[in-house]
Image (cartoon, rainbow, N blue to C red; front, side, top):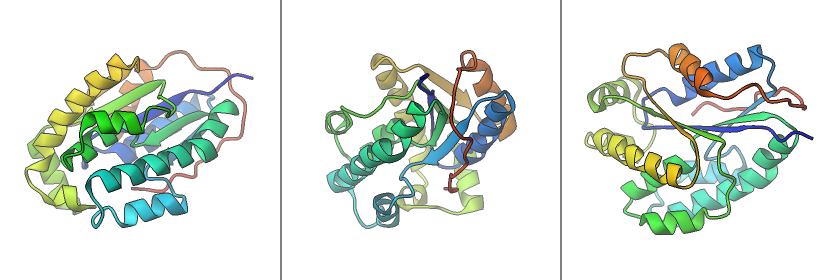
Length: 213
Protein backbone atom coordinates (compact mmCIF):
# COMPACT_ATOMS: atom_id res chain seq x y z
CA UNK A 1 0.00 0.00 0.00
CA UNK A 2 1.31 3.44 -0.94
CA UNK A 3 1.83 5.80 2.01
CA UNK A 4 0.33 9.23 1.48
CA UNK A 5 2.03 12.60 1.47
CA UNK A 6 2.10 14.94 4.49
CA UNK A 7 2.04 18.70 3.80
CA UNK A 8 2.05 21.33 6.55
CA UNK A 9 1.25 25.03 6.24
CA UNK A 10 2.60 27.43 8.87
CA UNK A 11 3.15 31.14 9.23
CA UNK A 12 2.28 34.20 11.30
CA UNK A 13 -1.33 34.96 12.12
CA UNK A 14 -2.92 36.93 9.31
CA UNK A 15 -0.95 35.50 6.36
CA UNK A 16 -3.88 33.43 5.07
CA UNK A 17 -3.03 29.89 6.18
CA UNK A 18 -6.58 28.56 6.44
CA UNK A 19 -7.82 30.03 3.16
CA UNK A 20 -4.67 28.91 1.36
CA UNK A 21 -5.06 25.40 2.79
CA UNK A 22 -8.64 25.20 1.50
CA UNK A 23 -7.57 26.41 -1.95
CA UNK A 24 -4.65 23.95 -2.07
CA UNK A 25 -6.85 21.04 -1.01
CA UNK A 26 -9.26 21.86 -3.84
CA UNK A 27 -6.42 21.95 -6.38
CA UNK A 28 -5.03 18.63 -5.15
CA UNK A 29 -8.47 17.02 -5.35
CA UNK A 30 -8.94 18.40 -8.86
CA UNK A 31 -5.86 16.48 -9.97
CA UNK A 32 -7.10 13.25 -8.42
CA UNK A 33 -5.55 13.13 -4.95
CA UNK A 34 -7.53 11.94 -1.95
CA UNK A 35 -7.05 14.79 0.51
CA UNK A 36 -7.58 14.93 4.25
CA UNK A 37 -7.34 18.40 5.80
CA UNK A 38 -6.72 18.96 9.48
CA UNK A 39 -5.46 21.54 11.96
CA UNK A 40 -3.43 22.02 15.14
CA UNK A 41 -4.30 22.28 17.91
CA UNK A 42 -6.47 19.37 16.77
CA UNK A 43 -10.24 19.06 17.06
CA UNK A 44 -9.89 16.34 19.72
CA UNK A 45 -10.83 17.10 23.36
CA UNK A 46 -7.13 17.60 24.14
CA UNK A 47 -6.71 19.93 21.18
CA UNK A 48 -9.83 21.91 22.10
CA UNK A 49 -8.55 22.27 25.67
CA UNK A 50 -5.16 23.46 24.41
CA UNK A 51 -6.75 26.00 22.09
CA UNK A 52 -9.22 27.16 24.71
CA UNK A 53 -6.62 27.76 27.42
CA UNK A 54 -3.69 29.05 25.34
CA UNK A 55 -4.24 32.52 26.78
CA UNK A 56 -4.13 31.24 30.37
CA UNK A 57 -1.39 28.60 30.08
CA UNK A 58 2.04 29.60 28.82
CA UNK A 59 5.71 28.67 28.59
CA UNK A 60 6.85 25.09 29.09
CA UNK A 61 3.39 23.97 30.21
CA UNK A 62 1.74 25.12 26.98
CA UNK A 63 4.58 23.63 24.93
CA UNK A 64 3.96 20.27 26.59
CA UNK A 65 0.21 20.50 25.93
CA UNK A 66 0.82 21.30 22.26
CA UNK A 67 3.22 18.36 21.94
CA UNK A 68 0.84 15.98 23.71
CA UNK A 69 -1.97 16.99 21.37
CA UNK A 70 0.37 16.54 18.39
CA UNK A 71 1.30 12.98 19.34
CA UNK A 72 -2.37 12.11 19.86
CA UNK A 73 -3.20 13.81 16.55
CA UNK A 74 -0.54 11.76 14.79
CA UNK A 75 -1.68 8.47 16.31
CA UNK A 76 -5.42 8.92 15.83
CA UNK A 77 -5.66 10.92 12.61
CA UNK A 78 -2.50 11.81 10.68
CA UNK A 79 -0.75 8.43 10.58
CA UNK A 80 -3.92 6.41 9.80
CA UNK A 81 -4.73 8.75 6.91
CA UNK A 82 -1.20 8.56 5.56
CA UNK A 83 -1.25 4.77 5.87
CA UNK A 84 -4.48 4.81 3.85
CA UNK A 85 -2.65 6.66 1.08
CA UNK A 86 -4.27 10.05 1.58
CA UNK A 87 -2.57 13.39 1.13
CA UNK A 88 -2.78 15.06 4.55
CA UNK A 89 -2.63 18.85 4.69
CA UNK A 90 -2.30 20.36 8.18
CA UNK A 91 -2.89 23.96 9.25
CA UNK A 92 0.03 24.58 11.68
CA UNK A 93 2.54 21.98 12.80
CA UNK A 94 6.17 21.86 13.98
CA UNK A 95 7.22 25.21 12.49
CA UNK A 96 4.53 26.96 14.52
CA UNK A 97 5.84 25.32 17.67
CA UNK A 98 9.34 26.60 16.86
CA UNK A 99 7.89 30.11 16.64
CA UNK A 100 4.92 30.48 18.99
CA UNK A 101 6.53 28.67 21.91
CA UNK A 102 9.73 30.65 21.36
CA UNK A 103 7.62 33.80 21.76
CA UNK A 104 6.87 32.34 25.22
CA UNK A 105 10.64 32.06 25.87
CA UNK A 106 10.72 28.26 25.70
CA UNK A 107 14.21 27.12 24.57
CA UNK A 108 14.41 25.66 21.07
CA UNK A 109 16.29 22.59 22.31
CA UNK A 110 13.43 21.78 24.71
CA UNK A 111 10.92 22.07 21.85
CA UNK A 112 12.95 19.85 19.54
CA UNK A 113 13.34 17.23 22.26
CA UNK A 114 9.58 17.30 22.94
CA UNK A 115 8.91 16.68 19.25
CA UNK A 116 11.73 14.20 18.62
CA UNK A 117 9.39 11.33 17.68
CA UNK A 118 6.75 13.09 15.59
CA UNK A 119 6.04 12.36 11.93
CA UNK A 120 7.97 14.91 9.89
CA UNK A 121 6.19 16.51 6.92
CA UNK A 122 7.13 15.61 3.38
CA UNK A 123 6.84 19.31 2.56
CA UNK A 124 6.67 22.21 5.02
CA UNK A 125 5.11 25.34 3.52
CA UNK A 126 5.94 28.56 5.38
CA UNK A 127 3.83 31.58 4.48
CA UNK A 128 5.19 35.01 5.27
CA UNK A 129 4.34 38.65 4.57
CA UNK A 130 5.46 42.15 5.33
CA UNK A 131 5.00 42.70 9.10
CA UNK A 132 3.07 45.93 8.47
CA UNK A 133 0.67 44.08 6.16
CA UNK A 134 0.25 41.35 8.79
CA UNK A 135 -0.51 43.91 11.50
CA UNK A 136 -3.11 45.56 9.25
CA UNK A 137 -4.79 42.21 8.54
CA UNK A 138 -4.89 41.33 12.23
CA UNK A 139 -6.38 44.72 13.07
CA UNK A 140 -9.05 44.17 10.44
CA UNK A 141 -10.05 40.66 11.45
CA UNK A 142 -9.36 40.84 15.20
CA UNK A 143 -6.87 38.90 17.32
CA UNK A 144 -7.46 35.18 17.87
CA UNK A 145 -5.13 34.80 20.87
CA UNK A 146 -2.77 36.73 23.14
CA UNK A 147 0.20 36.65 20.76
CA UNK A 148 -1.78 38.52 18.12
CA UNK A 149 -2.66 41.35 20.52
CA UNK A 150 0.94 42.55 20.71
CA UNK A 151 1.70 44.97 17.81
CA UNK A 152 5.37 44.01 17.92
CA UNK A 153 4.72 40.30 17.38
CA UNK A 154 4.40 40.21 13.54
CA UNK A 155 8.00 41.33 12.98
CA UNK A 156 9.27 38.84 15.56
CA UNK A 157 7.21 36.03 14.02
CA UNK A 158 8.51 36.70 10.52
CA UNK A 159 12.09 36.50 11.78
CA UNK A 160 11.45 33.38 13.86
CA UNK A 161 9.79 31.61 10.92
CA UNK A 162 12.85 32.42 8.83
CA UNK A 163 14.97 30.73 11.48
CA UNK A 164 12.52 27.79 11.74
CA UNK A 165 12.92 27.19 8.01
CA UNK A 166 16.62 26.60 8.54
CA UNK A 167 15.94 24.23 11.44
CA UNK A 168 13.52 22.18 9.35
CA UNK A 169 15.92 22.02 6.42
CA UNK A 170 18.67 20.73 8.70
CA UNK A 171 16.23 18.02 9.79
CA UNK A 172 15.85 16.99 6.15
CA UNK A 173 12.41 18.52 5.60
CA UNK A 174 11.88 20.23 2.22
CA UNK A 175 10.71 23.81 2.89
CA UNK A 176 8.73 26.10 0.58
CA UNK A 177 8.65 29.77 1.65
CA UNK A 178 6.06 32.02 -0.02
CA UNK A 179 5.33 35.69 0.54
CA UNK A 180 1.58 36.41 0.60
CA UNK A 181 1.82 40.22 0.87
CA UNK A 182 0.54 40.74 -2.68
CA UNK A 183 -0.91 37.31 -3.46
CA UNK A 184 -4.39 35.88 -3.05
CA UNK A 185 -4.87 32.49 -1.34
CA UNK A 186 -5.69 30.97 -4.74
CA UNK A 187 -2.47 32.33 -6.23
CA UNK A 188 -0.47 31.10 -3.24
CA UNK A 189 -2.06 27.65 -3.45
CA UNK A 190 -1.19 27.44 -7.16
CA UNK A 191 2.45 28.27 -6.36
CA UNK A 192 2.51 25.56 -3.67
CA UNK A 193 1.09 23.06 -6.16
CA UNK A 194 3.86 23.76 -8.67
CA UNK A 195 6.47 23.14 -5.96
CA UNK A 196 5.16 19.66 -5.14
CA UNK A 197 6.32 16.49 -6.77
CA UNK A 198 4.26 14.25 -9.06
CA UNK A 199 0.85 12.99 -8.03
CA UNK A 200 1.30 10.00 -5.67
CA UNK A 201 -0.67 6.83 -6.21
CA UNK A 202 -3.17 6.78 -3.35
CA UNK A 203 -6.12 4.94 -1.93
CA UNK A 204 -8.66 5.98 0.66
CA UNK A 205 -11.75 8.13 1.01
CA UNK A 206 -11.81 11.83 0.22
CA UNK A 207 -12.58 13.79 3.39
CA UNK A 208 -12.72 17.38 4.55
CA UNK A 209 -13.06 17.44 8.35
CA UNK A 210 -11.07 20.61 8.89
CA UNK A 211 -12.41 23.28 11.22
CA UNK A 212 -11.51 26.90 10.45
CA UNK A 213 -8.94 28.50 12.69
